[in-house]
Amino acid sequence: MKGFKHLSLLMALVLMIGAMVGCGSKDTAGTSQQEQATGNTQTDSSSPSGKNQIIEITMLNSKGEIQAQLEEAAKAFTADNPNIKLDVVVADAGQSPFEKISVMYAAGNAPALAMLDPVDIPSLADKFLDLSNEKWISDAANNSLDNVTLDGKVMAFPFAVEGAGFIYNKAILDQAGVDPTAIKTTKELEDAFNKVKAAGFEALAISPMDWSLAGHFLPISYATQSSNSADVAKFLNDLKAGSVDLKANKPFNGLMDTFDMMKQYNMYKNDPLAATYESNQQAMGSGEVGFWFMGNWTWPQIYEFAQVNEGFGFMPVPISNNPDDYGNTGIPVGVTKYIGIDKVNNSEEQQAAAKQFLEWLVYSEKGQDMIVNKANIIPAFNNITLEPQDPLAKSIKEYMTSGKMIQFMTTMPADHWAEVGASMQKYLADMIDRAALIEEIETYWKNVK
Image (cartoon, rainbow, N blue to C red; front, top):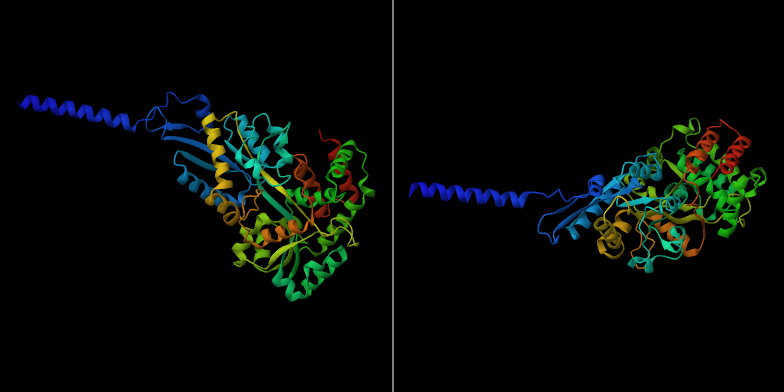
């Protein structure tokens, strides 16, 4: 009897250990090489039916200023979709999104979701999923899919509508007696700078980053060639062909005249390349400077220093002393970020999970709240009726409603802001004159493939 008890106990112990191993183990033998390469493994923690399957996907974020908000969104999405785990990886500061994803593709670990600039999408069309049949297509805002519709197929999701121009601190301008809505010429802008300085504040901050100078500021000279986008496209093609003489181009020289004047009032005039994005944010938010050329993406950081959700707005960059010239009353507005879904390094299950996340952003209350209220992004979807709460987004919406917009040049060559940006940095620091700057810009465009 004693031996039987020992045998029964041993058998029970073996059965119990077997059950524990069966419940706690992961079957990696069936994991595909593709899934191991991406690090996006799929774990079936229940039964062959896969009802409780955990699908891991990664998203590349090229808007570092909303990394915390996207991480929060990923957690909220997983809470609503327990079978999907989303990790958000941010692109390195100073590295273009295209460079980042190219490295990831070379390593065989491309993310399921990639947030990129519009110009990057055509280059990756053979690696991205066709999204033409997704539910959100019918709710996308007018023209928001134009830049990513290739051969009749929609290759990416429009994530953010953004704008740029002179951000102003209204509290400072009020003290200086400046009405930003009345400024429509370069001369009127200079008068405003003088009044702000006379009131005891810095007039202007110029960010010396190449992506700001050549990605956002200089392209105003391209966009103001014409209100017709086809004419703007022809102008760029003529630049490539070498048939444009920038020395005689009115919009270009008008913008550079404004820039020359701006340089004289730059709070970092004595060392213009030493300024940082972070120092500019602080100067604007803390009430040190009246104007700063930048976009609405910087609001979360301005707010950290301002701690008030009002008193900031946008003003156009004038390119002449004729208030009726095209561009003097409009700011660049457009879709600046798109999200593509990889079909090379990610399985069909991961692709489906990525689609589910995009749909969650557009149609769930949590997703819409993340886009508009948490990340302070103007959505590109008509069904999202939440109104932006931050003053910069509100200001852009006002320009959109009034139709006072110029084209946001988002489809220029991927290396434009780096190559031409280096030339603009030299010009900002007075290392080269305008003739040399023009030569470098024209040479760049002639060599664009």
